Image (cartoon, rainbow, N blue to C red; front, side):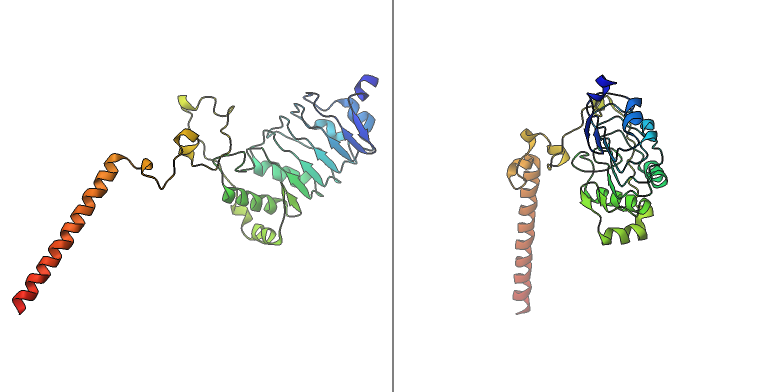
Length: 249
C-alpha cells in the first residue's frame, strides 16, 4: 500500500494519478480515496475503462485527458460531477456519448472533447472548418442544454437558442472514404494543421496566386489568342459602322 500511495499526488480533496500507463483505474484508489475525493486527474495513462469510478461517490471534477477511451465508455452515475474533460482519447460516436452523459452526469456544466474525432476541431482535423465545429457545438448543447462551457469557449445565449431550435439537425457526420494504397498509415500519421490549401501543404509548392508562376504556358497562350480575337472583332465593328454612316450620307 505504501508503494502505491507514493504514486499518488493528494492535496486536500484533489487527487492525481498521472502518467502510470494503467489500463484500468487501480482498486486502491477507490478504496482509499473514493469516499472523499472531489477532483480526480487520471491523465496520461492508457485507460480503456472507467469502471473503477464507482467508488468515487463525491466526485465533482474528472480529468481523463490523453488516454485510450473509446465508444464503449461507461461511467457510473456521478450526480455531483460538474466538470469532465476527455481530451485526446479515441471517441468517435458523439451522439452515443452525449446520451450517456445526459443519463449519468445530470449536474454537468463543463465538458471538453478536444482531440477526439467526435469533436471536429480544425486545429486537429485539417478536413474540418469552423462551420463544422459550430454545428458540433449546437448538437452538443441540444443534447446537454445545461452546459455553461464547452471545450475552450463559454456557451453563449445565442448558441443555446440556436441549439434549441435546430440542434437536433446539426450532427456532423464524417463520410467514410475507401482506403487506397497511398493512404496507408494516414490515420497514424495525420497531417499537421496548416492554413494553406490542401494542395499546397508543401511549402515548396506554395506560390503567390497573383504571379504568373501559377499559370501554365498553355493557359497564357489561350488568353493571348482570345484577346487578339476580341481586338479584331472590335476593329471590324468600327469598320462596318463607318461604312454604314458613309452610305447613309
